[in-house]
Amino acid sequence: MVPDCLFCKIVHREIPSEFLYENDTFVVFKDINPHAPVHLLIVPKKHIRSINDLETRDSELVGSMFILAKKMAKEQGINVSGYKLLFNVEKGGGQVIFHLHLHLLGGWK
Ligand code: 5GP
Ligand code: ZN
Image 1 (cartoon, rainbow, N blue to C red):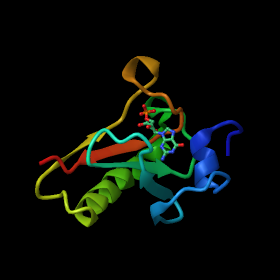
Image 2: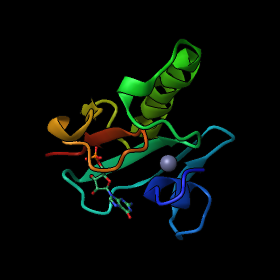
Image 3: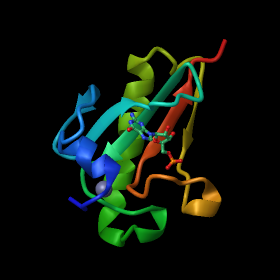
Image 4: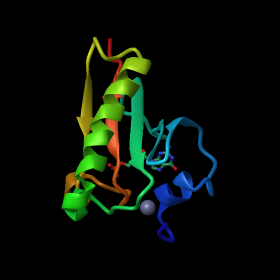
């Protein structure tokens, strides 16, 4: 847990949030400012600043993020219609929360 990290606070329930999914490794919750009818954030409990900070030992964690994204897309009923998966990386890449997260966006008509 990193002090002053918003997503660490959400993960550790210091800020109340509704989780659509939780296991030992991840939480999933809705983006507060959605850019699509379905906009979820897939967030590892482990604090990693950005994709730039990934290490080889995180390979399984990152792989699992995509497997979880696929599961959440199906649960949200957007797997067939389709969706986008997005990592913003550092400031120039649009990242504003420096705790790794995968955006799942979909549900457009
Ligand atoms: P980034 O730009 O860092 O990839 O995405 C961060 C996302 O977190 C943004 O889409 C933003 O709307 C979302 N966000 C920021 N603060 C909160 C919050 O307190 N709760 C939730 N659920 N989402 C947040
Ligand atoms: Zn964090």
